[in-house]
Length: 425
Image 1: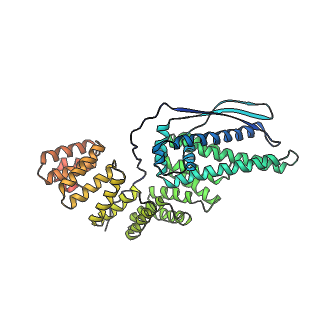
Image 2 (image 1 turned 90 degrees about the vertical axis):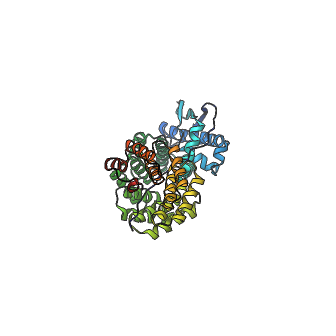
Image 3 (image 1 turned 135 degrees about the vertical axis):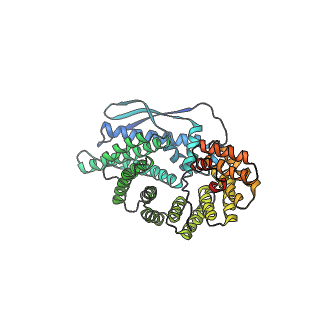
């Protein structure tokens, strides 16, 4: 049996309406006492990282106090880690006297914007883990940095070299976090510029290649993404994130066997990531391995019972297998979790239509169109219901609307005057 496949990616939640006061500025100054192995450049790098750490902790506490973020079921450390991937540090003033590096910095926060972006990021649990790992990496480097700074001596060039390499790794880690900020803001070009510099600074840093590969993936530069992710895996063969992102690229270019291999490798390395099972399930569908797909959708929901995308994809599986009651349950659950999801309403409407429950189908198509007035497929499907219930004029108007929105089936219907039932799905 040939199944129709809808690969669903991240769908952002629409937050309830709330209003904060104007953007808030968090200022902080910091003085760094240089060690024997320090230069002006290394002193500035460490001072910047220390002041950012202090500011992020303060901002994390501030953001956490908002009830919407509290409802996100995130720890304070997770909030701080995600915030680091959203906000940007600005240096206001700085001075170097050869022994101490003083700087004044600030971060301007729009709480509404940060909260919405945290909400979007938290739904990608793998990304949450990645940002948490980045936070831990910076903390580890800062601790190691302090030890090396105290013990490095100008007379011991090996200790100086180790210290300088540590600072360089700290700078790279900060660039990765900065690139995440640009990705979050939708500025992929700037994110790529930052990561090009990071790779140039540390050409053997697997995290740098992994992050640049991720940026290339977001830019749909598939060959460049695969090349960088290959390098990241070469440098660190157990880097689950790189396998996962390379699998996404392989799926995009229809190399499904390679995608399946990489998703399976990512799952073996990190077996508790729901999105990996969801994506592998989609890959199995593409390869017509339907039972394996269902197993993966079930596992994704076992790991995350509130995973809307998994309900939508499993519902589509049940629909195509003509298990309409099971599909109905999944789409209804998706709507309960995310009442503003137009796809869930449209898909549930299709189930009601197959069950000849036309009033319920019409209600769901109306809701989908209310959520998105330009949702062509919902107009086509609603036209089918209108036609079935004898409201032919309204069916014709919906077909015209869908055709004007670019739906090819609706255009064909209007040209050939065939019944709308032929193109309803």
